[in-house]
Picture 1: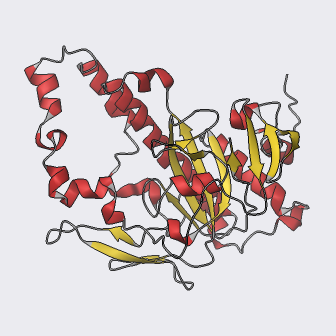
Picture 2: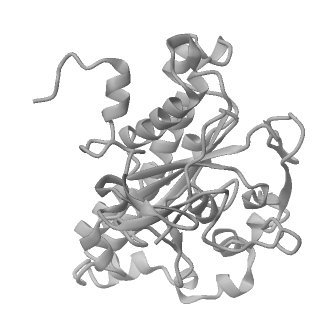
Length: 336
């Protein structure tokens, strides 16, 4: 039975929920690039190589690679790209066909399936991206006055930044993530612009400036301070059997549940960080790319199918992130 008298630090250290405490995998040996480790909680029992000396499991030529435009991702293109607008899924009302014309009797397309799917998308479908607010905290963080306090120094309670970084990862798991890691934010992973269509321009985009100290979601531009140079990468497992049902409504429910958990968990984690006096931007697919920060944070590697491959869940994950200026200690990328 768990010790009912466990203290705060012990609780934060135990949130991973396994005997192998998060951040302390078993070391099996050393390599020329790092160390071989195994951890059931982080890697599903697989052996991985934790890379050192700022090594990454990919090559990146900064002189060639440029920041990506959010206007160019598939979600934005669904709004303005004629090639995307002409595909069958965009031109045909599949809900009308499945629920009305076929009377909801087609396997995997019944009203039961649709209701299950629609509920799973509840938080992801909230208008205005309410869960992804990044200008200020909300709820009890404001209610108890944490938003008016100076940035917290962990030395006040004899904690190191290494311990705080582990606590932040544990908090991410407590709030609903399946995996969590920390990386130094590569500015190339931030979108060069924010897709912001209006009535006059379906392809409108506004610049994202990642420089200086200005912090604002403006109408004509977004501003992210240079000091926000850390990112907490979050992965959310999708149900195996629901995904195996693809392309039925159960698979879409697994996707929607992942997106809803992304919104809930990243916003909670952002408020946790804000409550400690630091800036935080919770994001799903917005603000920047999600796969590269997840690789940098040691959650997995880029697979041949273009998705993140994690040792524990394979590609069966959804990704979110929280960008912050909290001076967290990055985790090592892995090679497996």
